[in-house]
Every structure is written in structure tokens, then in C-alpha cells.
Image (cartoon, rainbow, N blue to C red; front, side, top):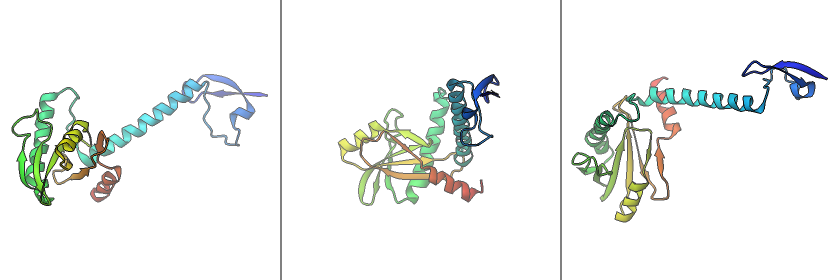
Length: 189
């Protein structure tokens, strides 16, 4: 015995056996005309969840609203984050004798060399929530120095996240989602 049902995604009317319509007795189950429609619906759901998360991140962290290829403006915003880290955040975390290599040349990919707890360390500043850093890890390993990444928010200049990067085969570091949620609660978002 078959019944006509409407595809949830494309609206096509299809005939399906009753045992496929609600096998667990759930009449509110969505129906799809094909596996392709079901997969498209799942992909759209995933993209919607991701879009909501990115909007939430921008509310908490701030955004420069730059397009990917606008290198000139992104360098200006990046330099603002580096100066903010150098002048305000790193000294409050106990870093001293901060040598600003990013101020000398934007080609050198480590922003600062500083003294922390009596030893010289490498520090990189970024305005992004995640950073791709395999070359920085290789440099830190070669120099036998500790590596720190400071994520600086341009939306709220008092907001930053500093962490030491373990010198493993890790290529991406990011601000933890738990930290973003904690800040959102503090901001009342």
C-alpha cells in the first residue's frame, strides 16, 4: 500500500510505501523525493548553523568586514592589532623587552620577540579567530624558543586571547568556542 507525500525540499509529489512514511510512528517526519534532496536539505541546515555561529562570533569579537583580497586595508587592520597587543595586552600579561619586528618589516612572519618569565620567546599577534602557523612553529623549533599567539579583537579593544602554542605538528590555532561563549555571557549577548 502506498501513499502520496510531498518532498520537503522541492515540493515534488511522490508515492511512498506507508512503512517508509513514518516507520517509527512520527507523522511529523519530513519526506524527500530522493536521497539527493535529503542531502541538499542537510547541507542547507549545516550552512544555516554555520552562518548563525559566524554572525555570533562577529558580534562578540568584532569584524573588519573586509573582503579576502583587500590586502592593503587588511594590513592596516592587522597593524592596529599588533600595536594594541604590543602597547596594552602583552605588558599586562607580563611580557617585557618587546622587540617589534612587524614594525620594521611586514615580510617577517613573527611579530614580536619578548622576555617572558626570564626567557626570550616568540609572540605573534593576529586579529583573526584562527591562524595558520606551521612556518612559525618550525621557526620556534629551530630557535628552541617558546611560541605564543595573541588574538586581538578590534571590535572590543579590551578583548584578547593569549595562549602558548605547543611545538607539535599543529598547523592551526584558534580562539576556543568556550572562551567566545564566556565573553558573550559577560557582554549579555
